Amino acid sequence: MNNKSVQQRLECHFYNYFNASDSTFFSAVSPQPVDSPFWVSTNIDLAEMLGISAKELNSDTCLQLLSGGLNHDDIDSFSVVYSGHQFGVWAGQLGDGRAITLGEIAVGNNNELWDLQLKGAGTTPYSRFGDGRAVLRSSIREYLCSEVMHGLGIGTTRALSLSTGKTTAVREQIEPVAVLCRVARSHVRFGNFEHFHYDNNPKAVKELADYLIERHFSDWANDPKRYYLLLQNCVLKTAKTIAQWQSVGFCHGVMNTDNMSILGDTIDYGPFGFLDTYNPDYICNHSDHQGRYSFRNQPSIGLWNLNALATCFSSLLETSEITECLKHYETEFLRNYRQIMASKIGLLDYQPEDELLINRLLNMMATDQVDYTLLFRKLCDFSKNNQTVRDYFRDRDEFDSWSSDYLQRLESQETNDKQRRESMMKINPLYVLRNYMAQTAIEAAEAGDYSEVELLLSLLSNPYTPHPDGEKYEGLPPDWASTISISCSS
Ligand code: AMP
Ligand code: MG
Figure 1 (cartoon, rainbow, N blue to C red):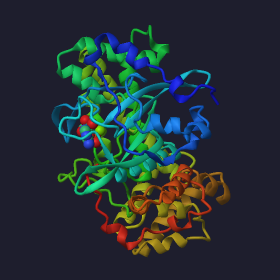
Figure 2: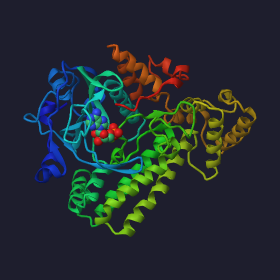
Figure 3: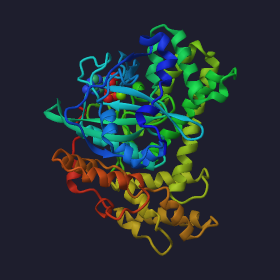
């Protein structure tokens, strides 16, 4: 643990780097406190990773800092400007309308920098018509989803703490607000590049790229191909992250270019959803009338977004280099997706014939509306003598034909049922953040009981391992789950 307080450890790397051009990249902003703040939950595991003790995190000083109680006289807090394509249409300037970065803290022997950012701590120069606040309900969803994604091994922003107070905000009704402390290696989005590119400011595009290389890829600092490497890294990481989303049934819901991280991490959790029954056409965002961001469209939207980003690199790279970079997306996505899906069904490696085996299973699941998470978890127990998973399918003949081919494929491997089961249990989660689970925690929290948030945080942080109090979340979702409608307001 570090002896200095979190506030003392806050560095101003981004702030100092861009201070000369100040309003080009960001505006200095003071968070606005919530009335009578208190914790909803604090994330001790993440604090530990950051070198913050549980005692310090839970202290009043930290509560003040992380609920927006310190102003710009005490910390060099700021909000950044970005633009973006929303639902495929150029939306112009957006920016951190309700996010304020407090600074970075250096972690570990390599002094790796992690941004600490408050989401929902009041208005900024980029708030446009918004109030700069985030309601408790959507903040609980982001808090828990960040941590389950991390637990699933998927690149993501993290969540250090969630506080609330007496302050309210008007949405469909009057609701309590919350302040989330989001932690990330970077909060830079595709939209940051788009902002400067479409503003005809190639100098700023280059400065931003140089900053990212200095902060994250210092080995490339003198490499003549450094901008190519930066774009390529984003292409490859985005492909991998989206392959992982598909493998756990995660639907982001708002894959606008301003919600895409330059490091390829998952960022900006809004009306996301994990699949209950397997439905490739699942649309989790009720405002997405065309299904642009449906589950099955995510991989191609990833490429669409990367094209939008790559256009912004036209002042740094030759067209042929940009084309070359983008070419890697599909190969990288498929390589990751196939390998993960092969592992999910217990195969040691992916063979071209396995595509048919995997797709036949997914097709049966779609036709018979089988629960995605549960099926893969139950499949861990599959063997010649244990085929209880058959009960999940209505078309038994179809299943028997598939399972006989599956068994044959398993028998071609030099591994026994026990070993296969063990490795499958490490890739097929027992828990994901199903909408009804979040809803249960939200309803309790809105009534002043935060224990369900705490339970879900603990259970979802280790989604592959049975939790002592987790049994109620290990089966099919209740019937009322299908009636939940996630409000797009947040
Ligand atoms: P999102 O769809 O949540 O990614 O937000 C899109 C844009 O709207 C971003 O620029 C946000 O900062 C901004 N925004 C969303 N909600 C608010 C709010 N309550 N107050 C100010 N800006 C907001
Ligand atoms: Mg956003």
